Amino acid sequence: MSRTAFITGATSGFGLACARRLASANWNLVLVGRREERLAALEIELLERCKVKTLTLDVRDSEAINHSIETLPEPFKNISLLLNNAGLALGTELAQNCKLSRWQQMIDTNISGVAAVTHALLPTIIRYGKGACIINLGSIAGRWPYPGGNVYCGTKAFVEQFSNALRCDLAGTGVRVTNIAPGLAESEFTLVRTGGDTGAHEELYKGANPIKPEDIADVVYWIATLPPHLNINQLEIMPVSQAWSPLAIYRWYSDIEE
Ligand code: NDP
Ligand code: 8X3
Image (tube, rainbow, N blue to C red; front, side):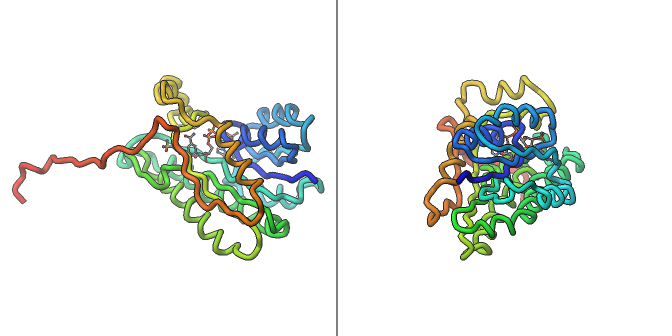
């Protein structure tokens, strides 16, 4: 019998690649995003391979999420994979120069959105039980801070620890929980972060051979189809071109008497 996945942020990047990957294995799909035209085009693209239900939704709208999930048509009620992928970073400014409204949007999307979708789908996922998965898209930004990361880093630290804590609560239900923490990956992420700066996008990925959305899709598919007694708790993935730098030490005060 075909399995069913619920994917947030299916209109672009990782979510889109995951939808295609799962459709190629004949999974049925519930696909969420705000851009209706993209969802409609994706539905037409995938329909030959699987059943598709699109939900034009903003994950910040918990009432709409609850209503859409409660009223899912029969073929899509038996969800065994929740992929909490929708998310964004806005800006690279230092904290002291950031707009509060952008921080709020990241918190509402990356934290409250993940919490709301998870809360709405937990009864369904628990009913499926053994073999079901919740896979959350964290980031290396949740583990390794960098200048300009501020609230984005904080939201992804939430995703990691929320995933760990869910594991504790879901022990005994058969439901698995994974936090995937990717590093540099080429998608629309940087265009969104920079407000559409194609130059910044090209500069960041140029010559770096970054992670591709299809790489993440293969990883998601692998996790979701592992034997049901196995749980990948955390998976941190970087392109080989990316590595840590030494910690910064600013010595501006070194000539000042203590
Ligand atoms: P993209 O910008 O390509 O895709 C983001 C997706 O999230 C889009 O489908 C977008 O759909 C959706 N989305 C954003 N806000 C909302 C919202 N309020 N409601 C519903 N959907 C929303 O980025 P990626 O694919 O790269 O990012 C996917 C996830 O992976 C994010 O959580 C990101 O933080 C994380 N990540 C990305 C990395 C990278 O370097 N690219 C590395 C590590 C983690 P729409 O606009 O149609 O609503
Ligand atoms: C995206 C990766 O390093 O740009 O989550 O924050 S990073």
